[in-house]
Image (cartoon, rainbow, N blue to C red):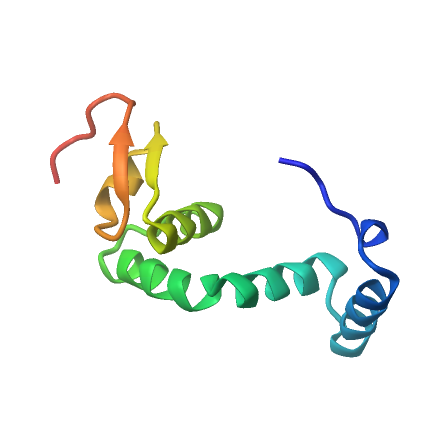
Length: 103
C-alpha cells in the first residue's frame, strides 16, 4: 500500500483537512480516515459488524473490523490466518490457520 501524506494532496484539500483538524482538535490522520470512511460508506458498515461481535462476547481488534467491513461492502473474499473472521457472517472467509476450537 502506498502512503499518502497531506503534502501529496491538492493545496485546497490539504488546507481544509488542516482546518478541520485544528477546529475539532483531532489529528490529521483522524480527519483523513473520517473522510475516507464517509466516502466509502465504511463508517456505516463497520459499526454493526463490531456490535455483533461485542454482543456475542467475542470482540475483534478494531483494525480487523475495518478489514471485515471493507470485504463485506465490496463482496471480497478474505484470506486469513485469524480465526475470529470465521465468526462474522457478512464476510466470505478462506481460513488458512490451525483449526479453531469448537464453540
